[in-house]
Length: 68
Image (cartoon, rainbow, N blue to C red; front, side, top):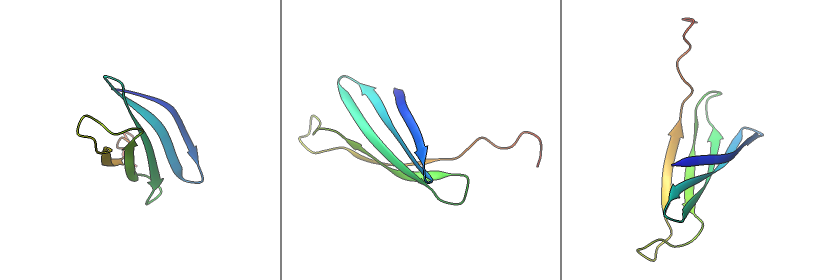
């Protein structure tokens, strides 16, 4: 999987996710608590099942290694 075009604007993270085999997801995640992002990734076109893919995703930053 390859992620590209990642941008953060007004606490919204957007990026494209290439799953391979010609399948691309467009992801839009919102910053929730000042740290983690959550939202959905949607397929640009219907997949093999004929239905668009919709994936819920949550991304958290790595733990602070300094111990805070």
